[in-house]
Image 1 (cartoon, one colour):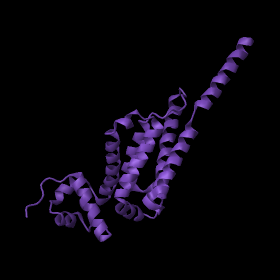
Image 2 (cartoon, rainbow, N blue to C red; image 1 turned 90 degrees about the vertical axis):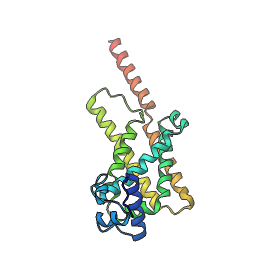
Image 3 (tube, one colour; image 1 turned 30 degrees about the vertical axis):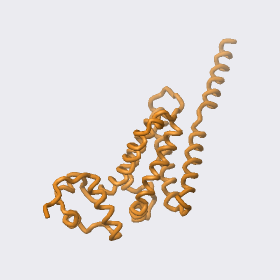
Length: 218
């Protein structure tokens, strides 16, 4: 049988996910993996350097697919930041659920904290970039160094929240993971409520008024 000449990232990801779910372990080598799936070993290295980088690619693909689904929805484009993030969460976790057996396998291989898992590094990069482009309203500090610090803090907090939700989902045994849906809604709404800067802006404006009146009086 002639070997496959055209191999995509998604092909390799599908082959790999099928293999580990059937054998409960990584392939012994790229050579045996490529031979089993009838393609030249060199084709693997055109896309990934190692199985570990392929595993990172799985979570990146889940994230990319989530954005593609959202971007195809005209209603999503009209949402504010809060509703966009809620839509992201629900769609992303639908994708995770559709591939739950693999996700559980991949994450359970590592007994250390989810935060330090290298296989989530591509997901983190994509998600943090997504958070940046949501244009979540923050305080207008007008000082570049503090502005960057505020934005970095927002990204890291959002990433931590995603990790906590992922951990909750992994342990959720409710039908259709309905408890995870409740967790998502409460967590996202709470985080945006805490980020509500309107009362703080009003306080700052009031402080400016008092300051101005005091000096004008004198």
